[in-house]
Length: 139
Image (cartoon, rainbow, N blue to C red; front, side, top):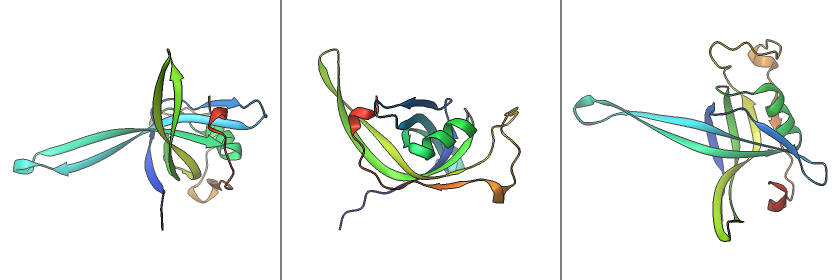
């Protein structure tokens, strides 16, 4: 049995970018940062920050673009995808998380978002239907 499943909770490092494919499908790309903290030698506090590129499709993409901005917290469930592209004549690779489910997290501090204030139970939870996605549609 093979498993390709990713769970991340982090904060957006930039505002999401929504685009439309040639077929009219919505695609949103953004990145999030996750932090890991631990006690190192002599109980010194240490921290590691990782950055993750995320791609969302369809309704999930539209909701993320509408309600999220830099600093917003988000829970992502998805899968890893590595794709190739060419830049300046050389083959390059990128690995990203394709969001299949998401849930909004905390709003950024000092947020003056135009999105309506929501109670935790009112925040949408989105489950993306599985679809076949052509990697050429991403960029």
